[in-house]
Image 1 (cartoon, rainbow, N blue to C red):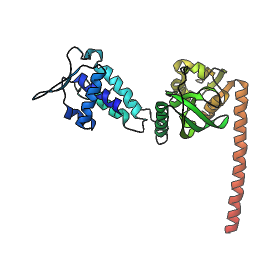
Image 2 (image 1 turned 90 degrees about the horizontal axis):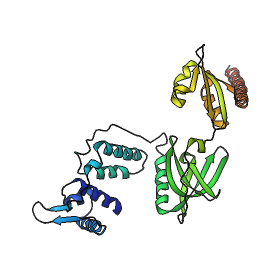
Image 3 (image 1 turned 30 degrees about the vertical axis):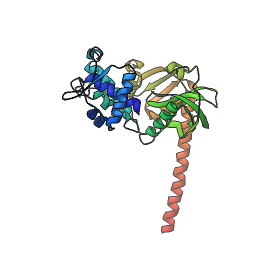
Image 4 (image 1 turned 90 degrees about the vertical axis):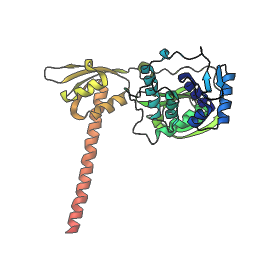
Length: 319
């Protein structure tokens, strides 16, 4: 894209005393004529670029306009590059990698190349997630609606939205937009979306509220859970809620009390802890866990008897 190339050229000119049209053409893999048109466009935009002919000549920015490099330290640049690298980890293209190269061009002494922070936003869904992100990014840029199948705890629905923001939050990717079904702005998790296709163009709404992403707003507390954990689960409590989330009892067990947002999420977490936790409150969740455990016991007992009979039948037939 031309705008990306213009930003890249400006970045090189700000970092180098001088460059040449052939060098820029080779770097961006375009013709010298294209570079000349880009330089002309930058001049029209008010960037005081000067060119000089002959031996030692080239393209540069007039003195007095050069960026003060102290505005961005090497550490600042490392943070910028770490952010770009993290986006490249979920990108289905080389866009962010190419952007990093543009920023680093001609500034080897400014960026020491030693990465101190590595951020990888990819997930187990690395084969399916990047295409979704790419489709939604294009839709946002082109202002086109997207339609998709959406799977949620309440069931499967067909949705069509006007997309405005791609968001990484709570270790997952979301798209925020105006839902034509609900007639309101909604947040959709990409892993629950399938069959994403572009729709017709739309006009950007005059008022677009920023998404409210606080835990309190998206996951309002429904109540308090009180549970006793086995000492072997201390690491999980520390990882999830911190060292101050539980009280160690005289017998070594861990008394845990915390707010929770919904019954289903709490029940799923407690089931993942197997027999290492006993829920005390709320009673409704305690009863639900008991019923699930009872139903699972009945189901597996039935399956054991069924397979046992089949096995016995086969043994008799073989005799």
